[in-house]
Image (tube, rainbow, N blue to C red):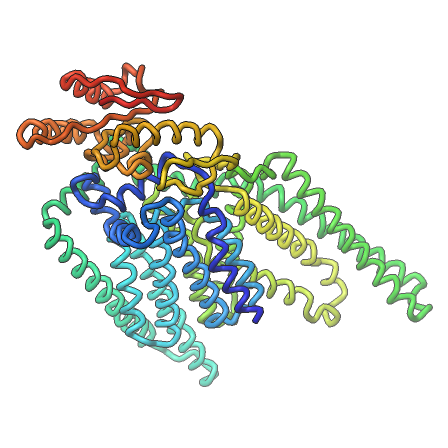
Length: 618
């Protein structure tokens, strides 16, 4: 019953904020693409580079309440529930981790899902990536070829969920690493039986054969998925159109420099490098704790040698007192460390901001990779655990590749890493205490207890900050929502959504105008940081709802504007409504806005509505 309750919590917990906040950026932008999927109202580059996520999202819009913000938040939120349940099942059933470890780890992972679930190309990516991890682990450890084939299908499919998932193919490293591990294990077993080191010329050949065989199955699955989806897209939209869209994606680094490979790699490396500053200082506290424990141990033994030994039980009492003082001293030092970290802004209690969880999460990931590296190279570790350790490291590194959000995607994908760290921390704690009485007395002076206390302190800090962040943070324009005291009463799409009074006023006034002028269903030309209006007002975009993005080049916009003029002139297309954010109205240096102004001047548009945030031209 406890585990059933765990699963229910993991299913429902991702839904905690489905009615919180009004985001004018990513949330409504993606839902607009789902609602008006196709080359008529979407940028073909984004249609093809995130094709499967758009297909799945479009299916959601056809379900009951699929035309509302809350309804789509629930449907897309189920992918986070699926991630948590899959992670729990894998760690609990297949890896045999304790139930509470799996549950706490998955709750932490869900809490750190800062990204809106509307970005389905992220969460569908994580689901297929996790599926690949599970299938790859089981396929290698159980030697089942069809599971390796299925793992390849997951990775091949992921290219069509988000084209930048290509680096995930590096998971094949796990296949080769496991072949090496098994080959060395077989060699060591033969040597142990023969009691000598025989000339084993077949070791390398055996490793290559096994790795090649397993790789072939993975590649077959990968290629099968690519052929199927590429074939369907070619039939549906044309192969040439797909290639053109992907070519534009690859060339967008000319204007969006943060998508360049060097920029993305730098964005991943720098946060880990910056964390070294904090790690060095945390290690000072660990060393201080070890020195204090060593000194107290020496004092206890010195007193016991001087006279307490004659008192029989007195020696044990002094030894116990020294241990208690060591525990108190370590806890005191760790408390000072935590206070110092807060004082120096390592983290904060401002849970509406990423600052609350950012550094604790990065350190947690570094702990996960450190534990994984130790388990890979530590003697006498079972081959299955070595494989798992390598997979955890690969997932943390590969998840952020292909994104311009530095390590934030990895923070969003801790569904295996979080339980893994807790599991290894529990085992390390037990190992450090086991057999302590039998050790040589001078070895007891070098105690791992301070390291254990600091490790758990950092893990607990991560969990507290993570859960606090998860309870309070809801994404809106790349920051957290702070006020959810008002609602919009005249917009069916936004029914029941809580937001700030200011945003509620903006949307109430604009929604009233759209209803009064019967603009619902009319095409709209949006400019400014407000692409979500296409979905919120149910007005399909003329070409790209987020036309001021750097990845949407000026040349492409000029081409789309020419096509719009042609359709108006030759096909009698109704001119789109223009809605812009007020901050761009006076912009003189924005080339894209100039194109829109020239278009409005040519067709004699007039300003028909304005409020504190938006202006409408017809």
